[in-house]
Image (cartoon, rainbow, N blue to C red):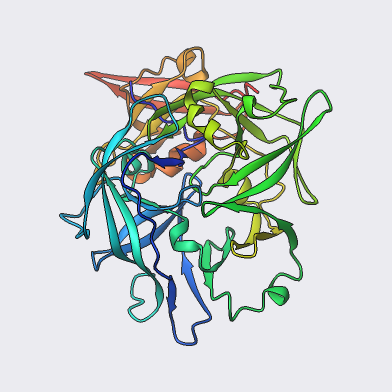
Length: 421
């Protein structure tokens, strides 16, 4: 059965097995004054979605994923074609328990990012590598409940200083030669990072239940919606929390990532301490390919990153952080034990595709395949998938009332959300 947990949507680490060619183009701003470009972005299930055009195509929706290097088209929902240049077949592999996947690899493409209506402003990336998957393993549109065509990585971002303002949902591309970075970040905390292969890693202290502290080196990964994950085998002294739950952590290019999740007392980034975060620990089989990257212990996702206003300077190997209004929000997760998707983008049908055995949803009688007609008296026609997930991520003890369709039956089911960790 296909499953996808919202605690971690993507493990976006890709390894090319054949036919690699590095892009050499210089990304540039196309804006009068050539200083910055401000792009509003959308958010779905903690993922940042931005408008992208490839070789003059109609605008597509891509997840901004700093955990990968290249641009990857996962599906062409709503489009007939995208013209790719000089494409040939390759095999790709990544995190997850499964096989490699065939893809088309194309070089020399023009990628443009700009808000609708910005004809003369935006960001243009020339001579870009683009991959298009031969099969849709991520199901981004179905999982997010809106058209999403792929992932766009660090090839787009590396030539700029990137500002992310999660509160106002703004992504700013700054010309590194024209920004007064010292002035812009005078109220921010500077933290050195390590850049390797166009990916940024940041040191994070994990304060554990046994009162030990472990320093981890984590990828800054906006393609993950979770708080953070750590590979237990990659660090001596890692202690698994006493209270954990089995978790389907997400989908990698090579298949499913499974493991466990639990809370630890706190994590520290620079002089910032965040209390009681949810940490995920993938199974070793799910992250076997991580062993080739000895300096990386895991990833930080958007459930943590959204608590900061930040400037990312890849060439200067530094990040600047300032706590925002999300900083003291509790770290949460889906407390129902069921996962919901939207099989048809233009029809308000919400489908239960996974129920964890022994979870509150399971105890309430929810079954995979159930169609949600009402949730807390709200009809499906009036809500979004994000609305449903906001309810399922609610406070422990909260009751969720469902009316579901199961074949010819109409059932009323009551779930009591329970904090298991």
